[in-house]
Length: 97
Image (cartoon, rainbow, N blue to C red; front, side, top):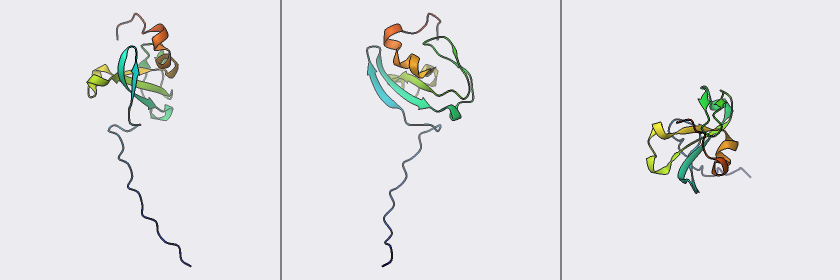
């Protein structure tokens, strides 16, 4: 008996700028939109506000910005995953973003 073709589900659209869709996170420091960035997708060096160390190209990390400013690129910050997860215990460095 021949195989029947199953209906194909439409592909989900990609987020603007590539990468993954941001997820919402609530914490004591407010509402945030957070997106994971793979190491393969990083080409620039960033400075993590949690530890004040560089995030070098090829390093997986997260990008976070206040949920109220969804479209504001100026408010987006690149964090090491561990620094982002522990920010409630130690907060950002004294360096001004």
